[in-house]
Image (tube, rainbow, N blue to C red; front, side, top):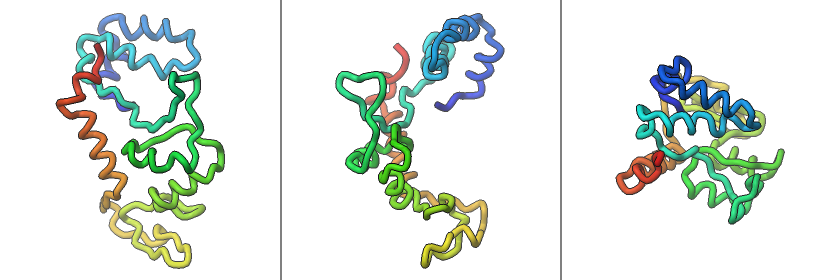
Length: 167
């Protein structure tokens, strides 16, 4: 989740008693972060119309949903990409789909970092392109950045923005 500075100030300083009251309520829950901020923002008049209801994750649930989502596999790869979500969950450790994400979406070689726009080295023979650093201020958006732009546009569109806010 992304929180604005004014909202975090409200949660810390709580010029009304709502953040503290909700915190005391959520102190008895296992997954407090999954509900605390949502509850405060949707119940604080000052912030309720500042929300975009999306966690930017691709998650595959049963219908009706059970307690935990499905583990994602290679069979889910195209659905993940088509969702335009920059994050996904849940994966088994060392599942082959993670290698496919590294190779095809992040262009990350085995044992290497995800290359940024400043990586000017060659990829030949498995060489790390970040072994040669160029201008560190260069930003080269990939297809993933374009997918996030599409997702953001759809979340903020006139057709869906108001219906995705707190009611």
